[in-house]
Amino acid sequence: MLKAKVIANTNEITRDEWLELRKTGIGGSDASIILGKNSYQSPYSLWANKRGLTENDEAGDAAKWGNRLERTVAEAYAEETNSAVICWPVMLQGDRPFLLANVDFFISGSDFYEAGKVTDVSEEPARIEAILEIKTTGISGKGNARGWANNQVPESYLYQGMHYALTTNIHNVVFACLVGGEGLVIREVEYTHEQLSDLQEAEAFFWHKVVNNIEPDLIGHQADFDTLKAVYPSSEGGVTIEGDDFIKDLIYEYREAKACLDEAQADVDSIRAQLLRIVGDAEAVTLDGDTLYTYKSTKDRESLDSKALKEQLPDVYAQFAKLSPGHRTLRIKGE
Image (cartoon, rainbow, N blue to C red; front, side, top):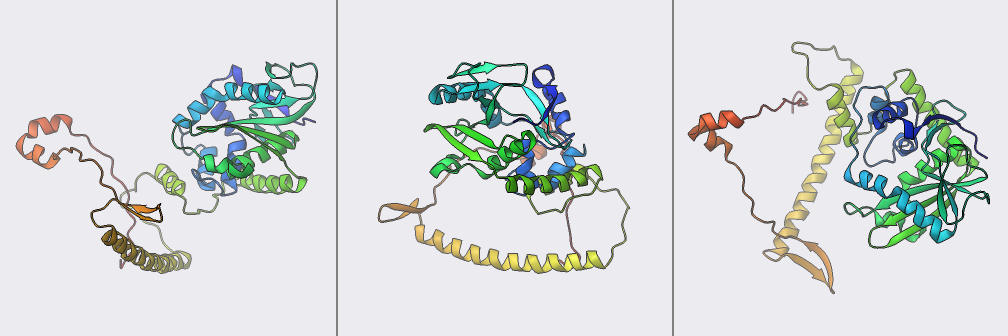
């Protein structure tokens, strides 16, 4: 039984308004980020966005194609399984104000809706049996077909479905993914009360930090560095801060970790050099018909010699010169 209220009809708001509304709570795609299970964002980058410190990212090609194909894939699922699929374009809020959900579709067990079809509704669907999440992969780019192999669901999507189950109280989630070169794959997941309880605890802890302006731990994800660069783009000239023993210990730990990294990198470089010497001027090494590794040449490419252009045609160079913003560099004393 659905236990959530409607806070917006997504057909009646712009994308920018929808993105701003998402900042008022936690959405499905945020769940894996909060748990540190996302390849593209970190808890700190998500926190900064919720606090309004960073701008919303533009949707990439994969996401745009996913949106374009969403209805088509839902129709294919309905036809293939003879299910009554319901499109109810709303943003839902759970029993905790920070729990938000934009569910793709619902699956109904009511005879009121035509089986094998997608039906559009403006009010809460009758007899909701499951949530239907639509995904695509390998449509634009390589994708992650392996994540769907062997009856699996990619981890980030599992947590997204778990968040929707938590927000709506509908514990059954069906994933229908159009996999490039393979077709439609269907995965059914039923979340346990223990799983939902653990997720709610993690999300409540994260949202407490958002509301109270408490920065989450940095995990060294690339998104951490990108966010720090966006939040602190430049240094204030002449301004310094007084350190303490914690910072002194942090620098010591940094040096120790970097020394281990340098040692490991030296091993990697040594092994890589051996592999390159073995392959020589060939482009691949095989064993019993299987390719072990390749070392192929890329095509030659042209590049502009800006230094020569500036020396010989300074006026032309000045017409097309572009000033690039400076960047900040970390330098530890003694390195």
